[in-house]
Image (cartoon, helix red, strand yellow):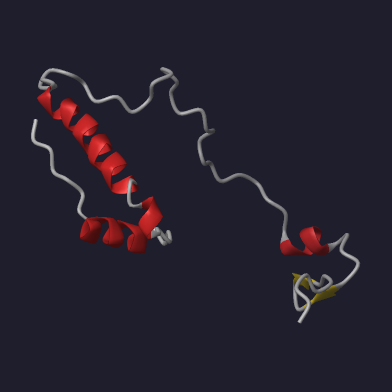
Length: 98
């Protein structure tokens, strides 16, 4: 297992990409990131050649219903109960105040 130390430059780049302001006092985070990457490297030592990839860990199949086009309202029916309409659309109060 090779340990690649996260440098100050690396930490600065990570902080920029994650939009997190990391101060000089918080530079200990580089050590923690180094430890985390070392821990993940342990996974590279495992022989996973004959292991089937797992996409669902709870053995459930697709729980969503099939996307089937069914009967729908006509535009006239959909707008029939609206208090206000304009050119075939619902008219509502403004939701964003300017």
